[in-house]
Length: 338
Ligand code: CA
Image 1 (cartoon, helix red, strand yellow):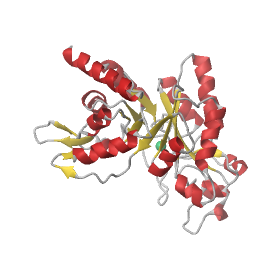
Image 2 (image 1 turned 60 degrees about the vertical axis):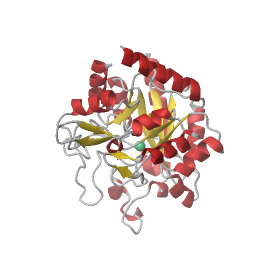
Image 3 (image 1 turned 180 degrees about the vertical axis):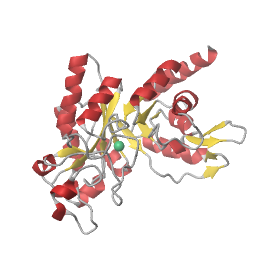
């Protein structure tokens, strides 16, 4: 009981001191939709995730040649559509088909599919939805926001959006300001204040700062973290370096999106789980932590069960939410332990 009161008090203190939002119950973010069951980023995958009860649905966004934001994980189209069949001559020298070389009308002629790898054309997750079957398309950001808001109305639920701006520097090098376009669409659909059910996430530190400091976006910002350079000390990161990073991030963002492997390192020989101090230090700086990506069909070696993995992150590591391809199964475990 004391521990619970102490944790609550700390949460309240952090909320009071930094005016930042931390979830009382860790949130479940449907990573590219319910992508464990249906092709990623299709409206079907988003509808299924909504129906399963996910609290937030993720959109990765890139631009078309005519500046329409579309929901697509990569700047390439070839691993998740039949673009090579429909427009065989439109690949670049590297053999890839870039979304930015196609107009929205052209993208609308493509069929979306379960992800295949770019070389062998084999499914990346062999036990998921069969590639190149049924009928799916690549939605625009507006179409997806309309789907979510429509489902919110018809179900009476309030599911939020979790939008990632993909490769802003690359878009810039192609002459496009993707961030301004995405923020304008979010604004058009009513996502503009910190209390709105929307997060904006980006890997690019410079751009995430720009979103806050130059573009004055008021939405909750998440600094995504890829492979990091923090020094390791024994079975943890150097806490001084971590604290410095978290302090810098807390000046412009409300949370971080780290890799799972930066939160849980593995197990000792005696079975004891090794957590890093990332979550603790992030919390000390008022930042929430939403790691990516919990996958039932790609378990880390330190666990044999998805249920145990979810419990490890939500109960032991005390994250504030997580990205998952399997929102139903994460919700099931979370709700049993709350
Ligand atoms: Ca993403």
